[in-house]
Amino acid sequence: MTHVIALDAQDGFVVLPASAALPDGWRATGWSGDEPTCRRQVAERPTAVLETDRLRLREVLPAEAPDLREGRPAGLDWLGGTPGEGSQEAAGLLAGAHAAGRHRPGWGMYVLVRLEDGLVVGGMGFHGPPDDGSVEIGFDLHPDARGRGYATEALAGLAHWALHQPGVDTVLATTTPDNLPSRRVMERAGFARRPDREGVLVYALTR
Image 1: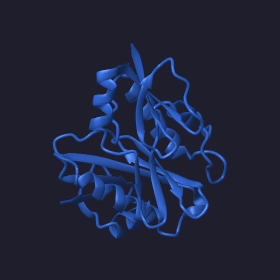
Image 2: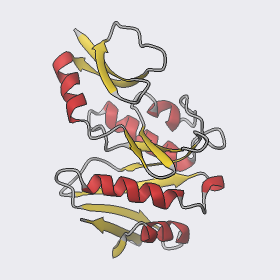
Image 3: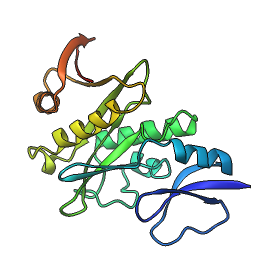
């Protein structure tokens, strides 16, 4: 029998038969398979939600990614109404990785939910699962939310979470030389410059 993985009202992952109706407040994740496979995925998932002082980082579900990729809100309350270009691009990468069977829960995209009003102020996430001990993070913040330290807070939180996962000792982030705000975010989050990569500035945080 085919089962699905859903997210309950408390953002906890649950496994149930594909024929079962989702209770109010539950969300489809897009993951499915036989029951042992689904339960193994749930047991091995790194996280669904992280919290910092002012933000809630909620993992984007594969079922939400296609809408976000097309600039639709996917049932989320975005500052400005819709996801920014960077978040759309990240959602596209997530959708593609899931379709190809390469997506690993925890190592995709997160929305940055502002605790004071529940609005999504941006997106942040990994370019893929760990590779040779390192992962890379990218981020996108709505213009009206910039200059308040949200990106620094989220980057520090997600990077430190990653460094506590098995086999990860380095978190990378990149930006262009002219993007001074992003450079400052990385530096305030504790990242240090590494050698440039084909004209792109590389920053790293290590254990």
